[in-house]
Image (cartoon, rainbow, N blue to C red; front, side):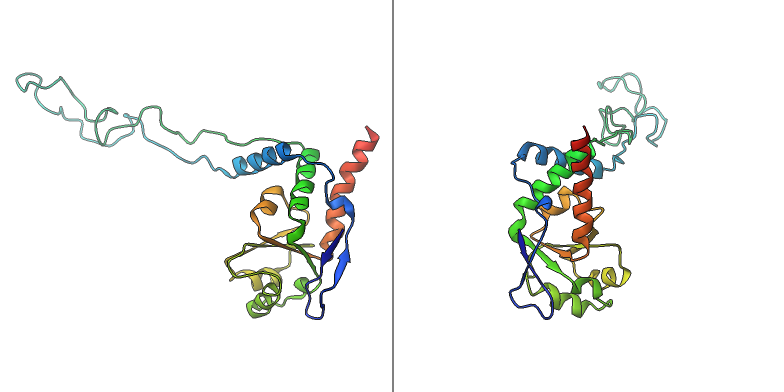
Length: 214
């Protein structure tokens, strides 16, 4: 598989990448499952509602017991009244996290990269950015439009590169070791640092070796 090179000096050049980065089988169900797992694990579960004993309202009896024609009521905190407590509401104790084994995650990632192969690019220059947004924008404009969501995959965390891309709202940055399915499918274009290719290959090779041993 060959991917286009995006550099200051390159002109319609391509680089051959290892086929292990891509899948030769369609695993749409596994891909959907992996996306669901990542999305579920992003949920914080911090929604919280007060029950009637936690609502701060006057403890005085609402109105006299008899003579009004209304039903008998004491406190104003029951859930049937506006401003009262909430029954059966969220209590910030929900755990939305899901699990998926490492092999399945990587197979899903392979499939996601395969679906995005027309939107993948490789660059050596991206790792040499010196913290200037102008330089970063110039590089990104070579392969994308301003309205597109761009994912930059670095070999390792680089503060200068992150600083250069921080002011670009349509750009997100990750490393090859942390790249996941959700990031890939949400991006319109993906720019991979040349040195990050080896890290991605190693991730997929580890799973392949374990499969052979079994």
